[in-house]
Image (tube, rainbow, N blue to C red; front, side, top):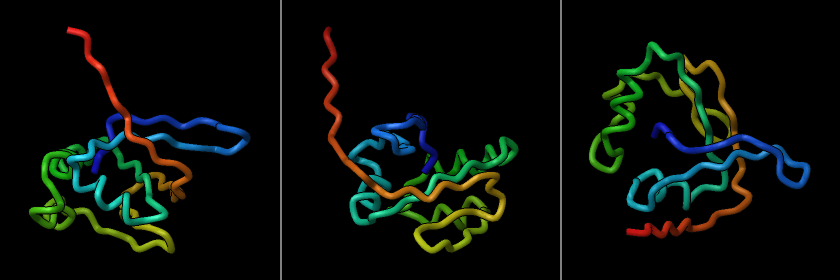
Length: 103
């Protein structure tokens, strides 16, 4: 799933990444089950594949096959043959984000 919101930084001397995933997304369900996840950065010319990954649920269809990307198994995750960079991340903390809107 393409992640639209996130950040890299340092927290208490550790390199960390923070990502935000809606609870309704299938990716959220998958992240709950695993200790590790990967962040893959694809070249911009793979926009159509990213669009398929971002607009199709893996719950309903094999969106990786539909996107045409070739997955590569890693010790603690998956990357893609065209990825320019892949980070293997271990979950350190999870929290529900509650947003209050003032109308």
